[in-house]
Image (cartoon, rainbow over all chains, first blue to last red; front, side, top):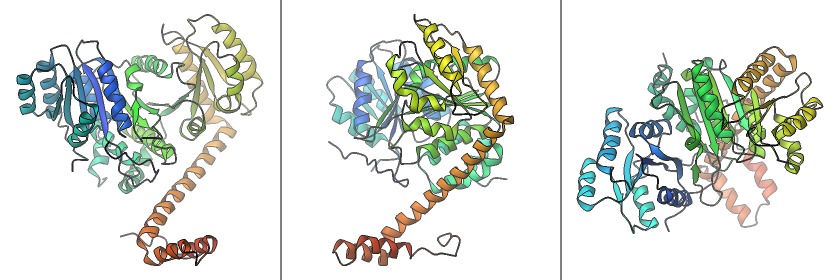
Length: 146
Length: 323
């Protein structure tokens, strides 16, 4: 397991990585997103959980207000090729810098390749271990990239 | 006028600037102090309401309804929602946004989720400063949602001028055990889930108790029955909050209390700054490091050692490390 964040109360400590976890669109299966939220919490991150039926707009607004480092999108509905690029586009048009996007769910390989090209930093299909997700979220975080 | 572009942005209504400044005050960045100094004159006008209560009573859902109510009155609302950090990993799941049913794209609302980050890490200062940033941003009302019961609820006294304690029917014996902590800080009791049976009993019980409460000389807490589910009781809740705000502004004791709050804050700030200086002295000052080693080797006892370290602090110069 990766090193855990310190809770020393020392005010000069760097802040934990902040991650938005959201399910854009209409699919109602949030078990996976919740498991990931919990795993990231246990890895010392602050997870802002938005839950079901989010629009790309509400997700990007939340990322701005929460000053998030990473947005994690979970989709099982097949709408990933319209919703994920929309999030990326909004981030660009609203001039949000320093926020990476990762995605998980049912995303076919050729779509995954196109999404990566568009700037998605990590794509987690079925069978991805929680450890791999944690690691990639951590390295996707602009603030903490080593 | 302000040199910091973030402060300039905040005062001009830039949401991203507000978000970045909150991050700074939350992590106690040295820059934050300068920003707060500049925005301080822009604070103090908003109504700051704290919501406390046990977990699961519906604080977030009630706040969600209240925000909708306030937006209809065209009041701008900031929300600071605090959830606990894990004492084991330092991580947190901040879930209050799930319950907030916000109008997409509404620029009159700004929500920030916060983790407690181990409490001693200056939660109360971070929260208070975040409230101030939201005030300076132009919010008319700032709502602070606390974690639950315990010490944090006492801290809400330092941050909010009106405190709403949210309860539900059938808390039964729990009510008794809560008395000492939560009940003393309440300016208003909101009995949520009034759609459930037993609500009027709970209200009657609370009214009785509120009438004999003595924590404040001239204020007896109001009791409001409401339901976040049905959206009832919100106009009454808001009018009680306004009534309390009006009271606070003219009551002698309440004014004394707010003066005391400022004195306490000042003291906390100094103590925090002192802590920072101590930390850097412990790690950078070679004489001090040598002293630590001598204590570790048993050559000097810790009591003498602490006096010697204290003696290394300048006694007259005001700010020796200032560049």
